[in-house]
Length: 328
Image (cartoon, rainbow, N blue to C red):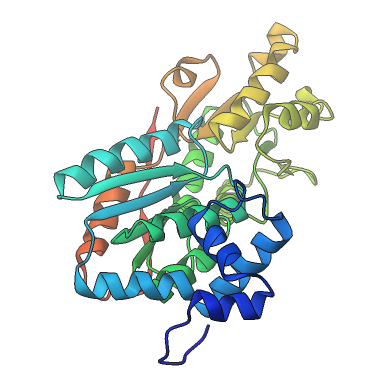
């Protein structure tokens, strides 16, 4: 970031990026494709502009004069009931609080997250909420340079306040409930997600802790963090001997689709002995046979905390944990 008191201009960026001022202008206003400017040039100009804080410095100047009532949110997916619920309730709550909400989906693509953040900042948002962002600190850096408040929702960061579900406690509760409903003490397995993800890691920890306190013997491969897609989950479970397990901790409703596909291929008497529970909630999935219950993340409470932070002048960078709800 350029810390000089002299504001960077497009001519400065043009020199640093080795491009013409008109090309720089086209990249910054988003018309570079129409101008047939190469992607390499656009990427180079964008990188230099980000490093120099060009568009963000202008934004900060505007916000010092008059802060916008627009609040932006980036979400990773729309085809997930949890994120869809957050987006819908965010819009309602924003309007109730006198804000104008703008929501955009970034498909869990870190570069698309940054592009979306830049675009929202260019439209003078007064605050930005990064929901489930893959790189929340990078988004926070952009916002900080612009003088715009940012809040992380669902996944935590270190450079802005974060509001997330208490995934460990929720997983602990769900695992205990599954164990209570299982026949005998056959091993329980964990399926779905990516072990390196914060939320999945916390859920695995809660799962292991509950199994340990109940003396449920975990299999060597009892944690199958194979991703979320139904296809990957079904393929991973194909290697599991169904007669060797008593239950399944399902890490998301997307994962649940793969579990149900796998169970449909089992002999009826064998499938009927397996109990499972799912982290995240869906009203139809809640009625599936064998499903002992689901963990519902409290979107209302999470958004309540988020809007409380929006009203604070200088919120700390702490992580706020919100309890999950067990739905039997």
